[in-house]
Length: 185
Length: 130
Image 1 (cartoon, rainbow over the protein chains, first blue to last red):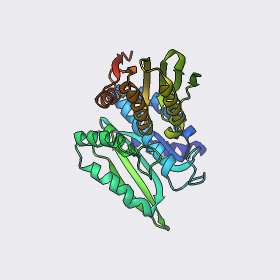
Image 2: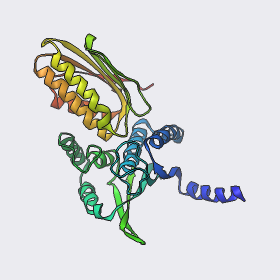
Image 3: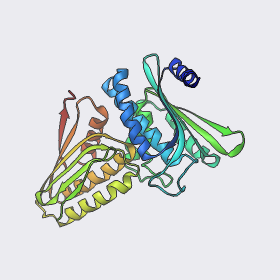
Image 4: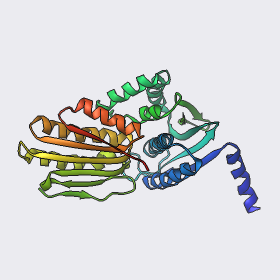
C-alpha cells in the first residue's frame, strides 16, 4: 500500500513529463543542493549546453525569488541572510522544449507592483529585453529589491517565449495571493 | 597590502587577490544568497588597494566564472567599474575574461564590459567545453 500511494503520485508526474519537482521551504542550502541534482538530471535528459545553462539560470532566479520574497517565511521577514521561505518549483518537458514553473504566496498589496514589472516584458521582443537588461544593469538597484532588479529580465532573456504569470488570491485569506510564473526554454 | 583569499563554496567563487603581485583572480560559480554581502567586502578591499597603488602599476585580472546570477552580475559590474576608474587614472589593467566557447550569456556580458569600460585592456578567452 505504501508504495502504491507513492507510485500513483509518481505516475502523474511522469505523465506530465516532470523531470524535477519540489514543494517546501527554500533556503540557500536547498537551492545549492537542488542545483547539483538539476545539473545531473539535465545531463541525462540530453539538453544541449546552452539550453542547460538557460534552464539552470532560470532555476536559480526562480528559487532565489521564492527564498527572498515568499510571504510564508520561517525566518524573520526583515532578515536577508539564512532565509527560509515556502514555494513550489518544477521543471518539465513539453514537446521539444523545457518549461519551469514556480509559485509562492505574496502579500496581496504587492501584486500590482509585481505585475507592473512583468507586464511590459510580455510584449517586448528579445532585442528590447536585452536592451532593458543593459539599462537596468547600469541603474541603481530598486529599494524593494534584495537582488539587483534584474531577476525578471534575466528570466525573460533566458526564455524562448514570453514569460507567463498569474495571481490567484487565496480563498480563505484575502491578504495573501499566490504568484505563479512560467518560463519556456 | 595583505592578500585577500576567500575559499570557493558551491554557490560563491574563489577570490584570490594577491595585491603585492598585482594579480587578482575570481573563479567558480556565483549565486550566493546575498550578493551584496558577499561582494561588498571584496569591492571594499579592491578599492583600498587601488587607492594606494602607484600610478603606473600593471594589474592583471583573471575572471573565470562558469555561472553568475542576476544579483552577482550587478556586483561584478560595480567591481569592473572600480578597475576601469583605476585604468582611467593611469594604471594598466589587463582583464582576462574566460568563458565556455558556447556560453553566449557570459560572452555578451564581456562585450558589455568592453563597451562601458574601454580603459580596461580586455582579453577574451573562449575555453573549449570538452
